[in-house]
Length: 197
Image (cartoon, rainbow, N blue to C red; front, top):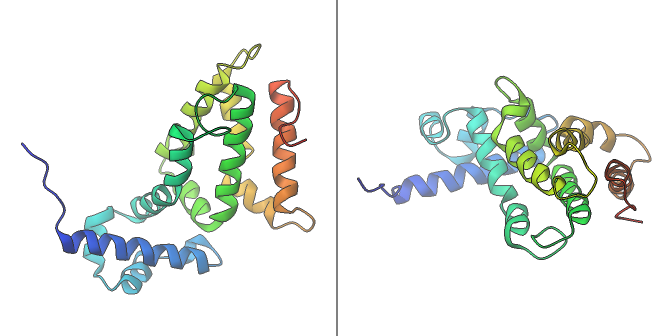
């Protein structure tokens, strides 16, 4: 059986919904402020259309997060060093974590909404499993590192959206300072020189 292409109006509605949700998350003070009704109104579609396309608020947030994350994932999968394949493992781990931190700083409300929307555990969410799997695979290439599985969890904890939000709101904690602190922490965990020294 062949897969049906979405109708043009469905594709147009999906694009309008993602654009509207994107704008609402950029402007909101708290990710909890953005409701499905708000998104439907801003996109000019009915709530039924929204629920059929995304299932629920978690599905909408996950779709928007995935759309924003596409350039980072492409850089990781096929891009040049330091994010792409072929980069020495210690450098690539530091670059991956830096990219995740920068993404979450640039998308604070959306990242908070997605990480807070876990139905059971945030560690079972698709976006977390993707990052953990990639990071674990690279960590397992680091000479002398015994447990890539745990190290990947520990390093990803340093870039959780709630921690990023907490630190970003503190006086004297600039984006560059956060990046430098993460690079130093990563270097200590991996037992190598700081990637941003």
